[in-house]
Image (cartoon, rainbow, N blue to C red):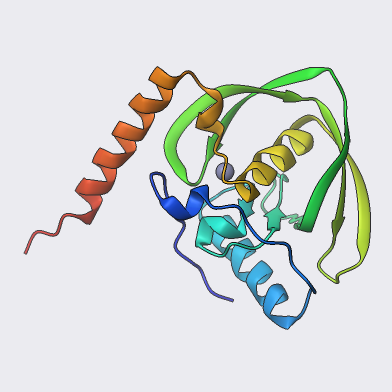
Length: 174
Ligand code: ZN
């Protein structure tokens, strides 16, 4: 198990469409373990493989706030097969958009078909925070970030801020 570096916007990889997984084998399981460790380390509740630079349709999540009772969830090749019309608004953040938050509207419930950690086909009916989180993570598989739902102006301001932060953090003083 290894903690990986989480890519942050702006980064071309985050805009890439991830590829379906053909089989859940040892390397995919290892990837999921690394993703989960990386997510916990950063206090996130969800992470898509592309956020650590791997363009595979894999998501890990744990929306449990109590750190002592972990409830990791794994989604391979997730597809939304149903969603309702009712909208839920959450203030979202993202490990790839550090320090930025915005209220985003999404369907309040969705039904997801996916393969689990063992490669078994599953269907999950999600609502509330779980539904929001799954949809946020699934957007990553399409190269979409939550800031894409904001006005062009707001998005531009956020990306400028992030670029500046990046320049600072990459500056080396010797
Ligand atoms: Zn995210």
